[in-house]
Length: 256
Image 1 (spheres, rainbow, N blue to C red):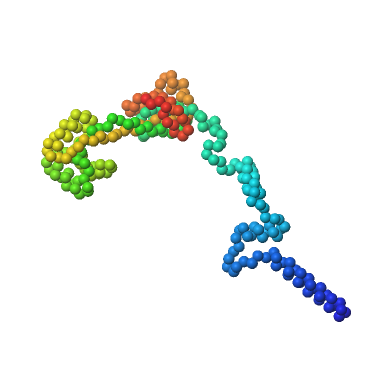
Image 2: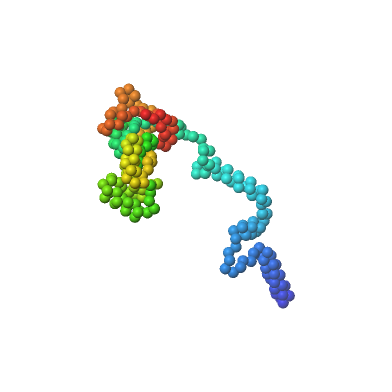
């Protein structure tokens, strides 16, 4: 019995030694308070399962295949702009009704049209900026500060000269002596002020006109083409407008 007990003890010691020596190779030491990096965890996991680390070219090809499968199998796959096929709505026809001087006026007319023609499909409001002939502006060039501009303004007003201080913009702190449609009138005032030893000059005052058109999807109804457009409550002379591009709010192809 003693020999049997001794033999069992030796077997247990040998088994314990073998398990301890084989398990140490699968453990990577980690410093206390420091987590292993993701790459280290992945490499340890592949080594334990008997898989060799993939080569760089194999890893790259795997990424390409995975990305292709995702793009083919998921409707949420990202695609570069312009790579998708244009749908039928991208080339849809549209037309406009305008031009209105005020946006509120255009929207009021839209409400009337939708009541009279319920099948209309409103697409938005097109804004157009039209450059107009500039006015002629007689001014004293901008002064260094607002205080100096106000002091000169009071001096001019005390002399009975109509003037005001430009509050902002490119000519901030200038003194306006008159804004004229006629260049002849502007030059006459300029001569008078220069005769009074006022350092005035003549500049152009740029201006533009903003107008608005209603945009509707599809093609104009036969009633609009044959009988004409219902008149607006304002003095706006309305007409059908053809657009070259109906994606979003279009750009006018032909202006009135």
